[in-house]
Image (cartoon, rainbow, N blue to C red; front, top):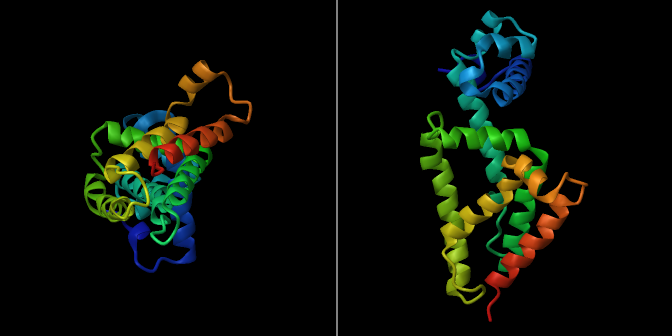
Length: 208
């Protein structure tokens, strides 16, 4: 169980310490992986003693879970902004742009989340099956309604969302592979990806 970090009304100092621990944990987990990371490493990176860290989190698992939950909340924000009142193709393309922006701004976070999923999501399986699935189902319903109304081409809404995840997060999770195939990023990679992907999805979703 989390301790001070999970209180409903934490003090300013408690919030600052929790944020410092999670920032340090991101560095440590990103460098060493979950199994290679230790509470001692996280405490040292956060500038705290181990007993002080244990006042906020009872275990390494608890630190990892809260970090992932916060990352997942940030990661899902672009999907939350999908507006049923907007133009369907533009809304989906705007979602692609936001996801690419997240991949560009938060590569370590993306790889940390990918690592958790590749391990079978031992720390956040309940979150994936609950809040994440609920959000995806709700937004898939919007896409299905657009297709049923003839505003976009027929499409499986769940697979559409999953494929957007795949093509956008690839730019964060497999940057070494992209460097090998495309050459080192000269600052144009994400702009080129955005132009290609929005064009590709726009053509695929447009009604003939």
